[in-house]
Length: 130
Image (tube, one colour):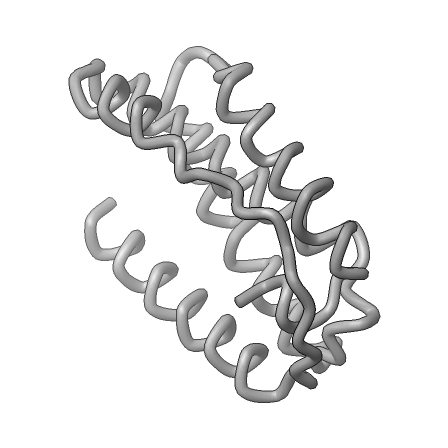
C-alpha cells in the first residue's frame, strides 16, 4: 500500500503542478475558508480504518471540486483527466481497504464552503485554485 500510495501521490502532484503552470492567472479577491484543523486532529487519533476512510473522502471531495467547472482555469483537458483518474484510483483503492463507507459531514461541509465561497465566487478561475 505504501508503494502504491507514493506512486499515486507523486503522479497527482506532478499533474497538479502541470495544471497550475499552464493556467491563466486572473487576480480576484476571495473569502478565506479556514482549514479544518480540528477534523484532522480528531482523525489522527482514530483507527487506521477511519483514517483511510477520511483520506478517501478527501480525495472524492477534491475530485468533485475539479469536476464541477474548470473552464475559466484553462487547464489542459488531458492533464485534468489524468489527474482525476489518479485521484479516483487512490480513493477507490482506499475504499477497498476499509469495511465501512463512513463519511464526515463536517468535512463535506468544508468542501461545500470552499466550492461556494471561493471557487464559485471567483468564477472557477485559475487564481481560485491557488
